[in-house]
Each structure stands twice: as C-alpha cells, then as structure tokens.
Length: 226
Length: 226
DNA sequence: GTAAGCACATGATATTTATCATAATTTGAT
DNA sequence: ATCAAATTATGATAAATATCATGTGCTTAC
Image 1: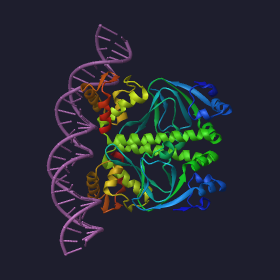
Image 2: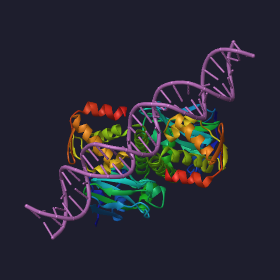
Image 3: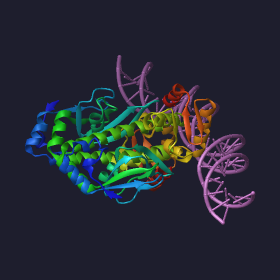
C-alpha cells in the first residue's frame, strides 16, 4: 500500500486523461495504491462503500448474493473503475469485488472523486459515458442469460474470454468450474457436462483450466442460437 | 407537439431542479413536448438515437429484441429520463420504449443536454446518481430473473405493481398476459397457468386485467423463495 | 346476428436442467 | 511418495417449464 503520483501514471483512465496537473495532484494526494492476490476480496457486499476504485491491472469478478446462490454479475478487466454504481448509488455495497489474478488498484476517496466531478466537466462526462456503456452491456448480458440455454451461454462466455480478455484462441480459464457456473448461472455439474460435450465434439479442447478453441464457427453458432 | 417553458414546469426532474433560469431557458428552447397513446413507440431499437427523453407522465416499457424473443428490460414510470444509456452510450438505440398508457414526454436534443451537463455540475452529478441507481436496480433484477423460478418472479412483479406503480392492493394490469410473459421471461401459457394457480389458492383474485392482492404475506414468501 | 379474429385458459407431452449419488482426478500437506 | 481434501466428471432421476394442441369467451366487422 503506497501513495502515488497520479500525474506520472501511465495507465490513466479515459476520464483521468481530462484532468490537468493540479487536479491530478488532488487525486494523487488522496489516492492509495494497493495490491491483491488471486482470491482476495477488494470490497465486500453489505460493507460501507466509501471509495471509488481504479483497477490498474488484473481481472476481477463482481459477485452478488442472490436469493438462491452467489452470482457473478460480470467480470471487469483493467483499466477500469470498480464500484461506481455501488459507491455513488447507495451507501452500502450492493455487490463484492474479488481478484481473479494478481491485481493492483487505486483507492480514491468518494469525496475527492465528487470534487473532481464537479470541477472538471470533461472528466465528469467521460464517467457518464462509461456508466451508460456499462448499462447497455448489462442489458445485453441479462437478455442473453435469460433467453439462451446454458449451452449457448457457456459458448458465449468462452468466446468472451478468447475475444475480450485474452485475445487468443488459447487461454487458461481464470475461473473454477464452480465459478463458471456462477457466471453462466447454472450448476457445477452442468458446466462439467457441457464442457465435456464441447470437447468430445472437437469444438474446444480442454485440459484442466487450459482451453483451446478448435472450431470457432460452431462455437459462435451455439452462442447465438441457444 | 409543442414547445415548452421549462422554468414553469411543475414536474422537474431531480437533476433539473439544479438548473437556474437561463439554463432552464436553454432547455426550454430546444425541448419539445409530445403526447403518446397506449401502444405508441416513443423510440425504436436500431434507430439513430439523438434525443434524451424526459418522461413527464405515464408508464413505459423498455423492450429489447433478444436472440429468441422480445424481452421487457424494465418498466419506467414518470417522472424520469428515458434513453440516457442508449443515447449517450451508443449512436444507435439498443432498445425500444413503448407507452403502456397515455404518456407525455419532452424530447431534449442530445447536444443541448451535453451542454447542460458541462455547465452545471450539480445537474451532472444528479444524472450520475440516477445512472448508478439504475445500474444497481438492473443488477438486482437480473439476479432475481436468473435465480428465482417463474412463480417467484411473477409474484415479485405483482408486488412491484402494487407497491411501486399503483401503491394499492388493487389495480389494473398495464400489460397483456403475453407482455407479462416478456417481463418475467417465460411463455404466455405459463403466465396464464400460474396466475390461475395464485387465484385458486386465494392469494390473488383476478378478473381480466384487474388484480387484487388477497394474501400479501404468502405472495411475498413466494417472491423471495422462488 | 353471424363470422372472424384475438386474447386467454388448460391439458398432454417433450425437453432442459437441477439434484442426488458416486467415482475419478488433481492438489496440498506431511 | 502418500494420504487427505478439494475439485471435477458422469450417470440416474426428478422437477420445472416450453411447446403443442385444443377449447372458450370476448370483441369487431360486415
């Protein structure tokens, strides 16, 4: 945990690029950089929410306790802000954030963040754009979750890893089977079964957490048609 | 369709309450008030999105075409803004808005709206708060949709009508059975069946679209436990 | 007044998926 | 290396729900 100089930061957010040097100093003076290991909780549902978190590096899951089980709302990959909705929209965290790999994150006091929003309208507008895009993503994800069958959801998420996160046909799953189940909203067993199926049909190859996409076309069709 | 004087408007949004008279005049000069009848489309998915809409009165559904069928993302009740995420977050509407009853709405050009965001930080912050709260709502709704069984979702939505929309144990459903199915993400037939069940068990009484909640306690339990 | 069309209800069947049970495999600790 | 614990796989069964089929009542048009 260390204080930082935000003006020197090489991985500024789109919003922070609009801040001038004095503003970056305001940010830097109240900003604390922290590292997390895989599995560490960055913030926790039902705790008081008093910081905006800027994720500098790493991959994080947002989880919410549902009526039946815990669910992964979405994954967030650096660079991005974490906890804007829950810190600004409520006094208490409506969900948790957990590191899926080693992560570095900057904690920004909500009052400092508010101050920056009020003195720099370009910064503020970038935040608004980000929130809007997030909500659109969320709508799309929700519709797919509800309408597609599990086979389609699983296929869609495998493509998401390949295309958005790792940008490669081959990658190591950052999630256990059980977490994958929380992500596609089903049971561990069903995830196991369907992964086995995909492998048997030579659509993917799988060995432990290592996935290789063998037939992207079919995987895409499965993802779209349910 | 008529031009309006926003400074005289009695149903200002929380955000617009922060605008001073000159700012309200900017708004008023580019703001057009329009009426819609039940069933009218206010804006349409895949069309260019160039206006923020302030819903002055009435009830609206937001619908998105999913991979299998059309789905109701959520209902929006006046007073509120419509289409912030889709107008600011993308060039094209990601969803449609359809009036469920007679509606009046003000169309605000996106450039004027952006201008107001940049010159008045209190206005801007209220918009941010609204977006954040929306996203939290959306997370909760999505988790319930995915984890609860249909009986629970239906019960939850009936309570939503009673508590949030009509603030009464007795009301007329603003949706057909088919639309209700789009809202709780199931088939028409299943909605019919479950409504009949609820009525047979004397938890609600139903006659056409008229609903009366007879046993709120049980309905709540069903809503929570799936 | 009758026919046509539409929304809604309901029974029968098929499919998807959860759950339960058990086995296999991997991982970690000693 | 060996054993215990955790994770993953897989088969059998049951439950929820979609789909298909049919029927009923209500509205609208002519």
